[in-house]
Image 1 (cartoon, one colour):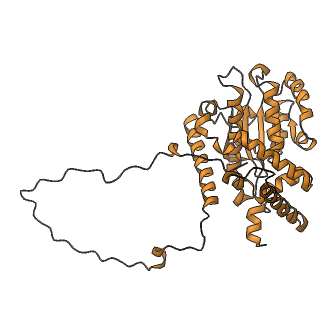
Image 2 (cartoon, rainbow, N blue to C red):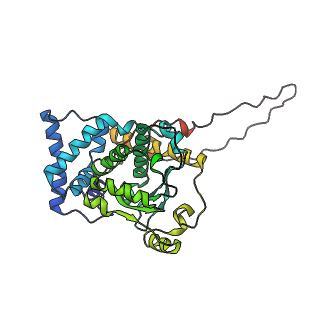
Image 3 (spheres, rainbow, N blue to C red):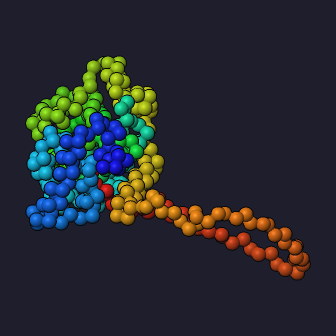
Length: 343
């Protein structure tokens, strides 16, 4: 196997390199899905599903099932079934913008934990929001996709995110029913496996602890071990978070040193930019650029043009030309269309 291809496909740069046996299991899982498709056991994969079904995806699903081939295959097929209903590649920031601009769930590509995982910030709702639960779920999945794009996996090898949640002012009435939270947890565990690095919960009231206790049986032991309740005095919380995160990059709402950073106009543009990146990644998958291809212009040596001196003509009796626009501005990035490249 070409080492450069392996580095990009399997993201060996950031995690423990795969053993030859694990690499073989990755290939076997991908081949098994292809065989299942040929047999008609699963519906034909769409282009977006093929984009999603990468060696990295196979690696994540195998790791989530202790490298058991059959269990990982079953899990992949479960996600493919979920895709038929959810179609995450159709989620666009424009569809969720009213909720996005509430500033309840966001991330900035330049804010990462000490291991390089992008941090997703979340604030619980403290008032009734005029959105149904299906709308909120799709918003959550779109936000996960944005966090994945910000990892820049191909260059960094990072494919997990850290989630920092402030539960200040938590009220169960405004933060989703048990059914809503079950759907969300199921998606995180079964359709986004090995994406979560850690979850830090701050400002957690006792009522949330009871709610979490009711939901925790839905979590597998590995996911449950990633959830950290950070409590105590302000200094104690800061010390604990400081172990994993630079406090100068966090807002005051998360015990950090910065004032509120969320700016609607700035973040709206970032969201459209992220969607444009997702679309570009998918288009590159559909039409891979040839790195060795050279344009005809690149082949030709550049010639220096000699400047010709123009004789000045008399302007007597001639009217000067009025100023005319010489070009048009670039299209607004907000007009970009986006298609999710996968989870």
